[in-house]
Image (cartoon, rainbow, N blue to C red):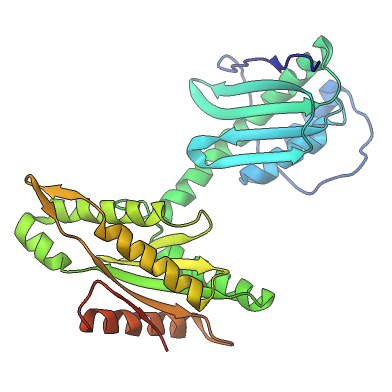
Length: 308
């Protein structure tokens, strides 16, 4: 029978810790070190990065100089962070990290051998060295994400779209993988604003964005291109598969039940789809998707048009 999991709660509200951060690369088979030395070492090592993944990875590698581990897991749901290092094991020691009432996530140490009291005390002491760099990295991550999000629809903004699209095009070309984009806008959106007001228009934008995200894979990305126009980036997706995704999105908006003043508002979208051509630039890809969208609108709206 597998022994029960050890679970602990640790709160560093009263801890008087100096600000820390992070560094570098994984180090193999580091010499054993005392608790005091390791805490001093972590204080230096955790000062040079604001990247959560790198900080947690380094912490996992360094802690093993004092307490043997098979794995470490870190979870911070509101930041969409779920990190795992090593392999799952039968025993665990889990900690809920907080500082001055601020929740910093859940961290779990794992190994096949049960932790003794001395090891748990050592782990808890080392966790104190992680708090400030982790908190600063989470704040930095939130700030970066906020700068790249459209605040109304919670999709990527134009800046995020330009950065991501260029990166994904480069990756697709390097790995010889397909890539497609869908450019879409809400049909007759100006009439909605004129008849019901801009606040209703804003709610429609949010409802449409939510529906789009719900009908896409986790790896697909949605960006607000401008006004009532969105762009969907479909990495690893060929022309035929992208057409199927476009139709799924179109039907999803048709099924959207949105009430205004007690009446159902009929919503639909028009879409233009383009698949990356050999040696094609990002600008050319977007132009072809935009032309296909124009064709869909010209031919009656509420339809998908494929770029030539």
